[in-house]
Image 1 (tube, each protein chain N blue to C red):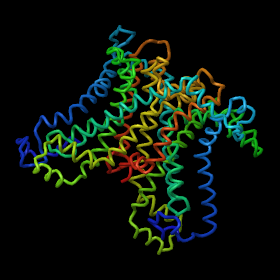
Image 2 (cartoon, helix red, strand yellow; image 1 turned 135 degrees about the vertical axis):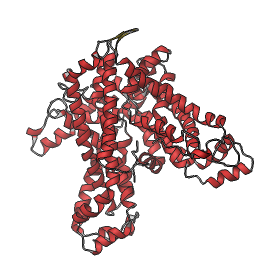
Image 3 (cartoon, rainbow over the protein chains, first blue to last red; image 1 turned 60 degrees about the horizontal axis):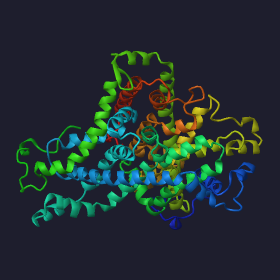
Image 4 (cartoon, rainbow over the protein chains, first blue to last red; image 1 turned 90 degrees about the horizontal axis):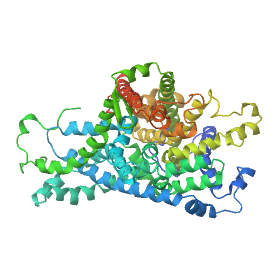
Length: 289
Length: 312
């Protein structure tokens, strides 16, 4: 009974104790699930600071000593620095462009009445369900035609198009809720349409834009399929395909793979630590009804 | 879907300053054309080109028109049908696992455990890991000699159950489904939790007053009230699994013996991995699958009678 009397009580300290046996069972399930989600990750973290020799003696031992040089070796000798900077370049470029372009479109769709408004929205949005193969093969051909195959610029362009529907969708929903009064007032003050976008929509929409930025960043940082098709040059690999290629060549070198994986995960974890609420909200936006 | 926001009688006055909700065409062009150009150039055109290509045999620069031959070949391509079967198994069954795990986890947090905020963040973490990372981790977890799964089984005296989880055709697909659920349960949990918190308080309190038990409350109150959310999540998970590629490709490559082949991995293999050098045939698979996914989403939306707009 006590379960539901605490509806909405987000602060666990303020809730009365539920029945003891239920509590015990619950704690057990929760503990087990937490180990299930975080355990593998912590295991990976321990392996990243152990040498492969140590790991093969005992896969589950605590690192002693901590071999931090694993990261230096992965970064310098195993090319993870190249992969890291390639990923950074492509993802930052794509996220910046897609957010700006998407925000402009979202603003026009959310604010102005014009014929075809909902049609354009539906068209942009519907591509969210497209299976990637429908564009994958042709994009490969198109990029080859335009000499953008195997180039970071080509991959960046493709990434912009991949994230555009989600960006427009998230931002349109938010921009539509900005009160019209603000725009009326701005118009009366003589603001032009572009100025309104730059000086009202962008600042007010910043929380939503930040959410979109982080979400796009993480999704593209993790992207694999298009990268593996569109990039073959080892010097242009992004992190996901770099790790995959490294694993293909050094299947047994578990310690080094773990260090490489950690390098790829750290930016995501950092983003998550700082923006966990924003991220969760962005990823779940719209799924709640 | 195609209804416009504008009423027919006020379409004629673009750019009139009187109504701040309308603007001149040049302004709309500035705002919309970059997005539309990207959409047309990098989504719509490639999609049409794939469908167009599916009527050709394309080897390098030579395209030979073959009509419906690719589609005919597809109908008798056993590997394709195995891939379709695997993808359907995955898409229809696995979302139940994802969504129910998510719901149970949300209920656990909702029941008011300590550190709820920490747990919510912790359980969500796998959602953010890339498939490459998840795949590598789980390949190690499933490792026959030293993977944690077999180690635990041996430790509790069930060593006979220790298996080559990814090497056995009967187990591989299940093993992949579990891995995928591990990644996505946290997402479903967060959505369910938000939905539970937005349920009207009075209904749940009324259930309390009626001495409604935990199970009954779940069945008669919470699940029916969360129905739209749960259906939405099911469809989302369904779409995601119809596209599944990364995890399969890295963990099993579609093997052993096509046991985990999905449509996506098969398209990839035919287009870029086998030395068949023909992009027409995989285009046909992609076109068919595109139709199937769109149809499935429309049908699911209808059948599940969700009045809510499809998200994602």
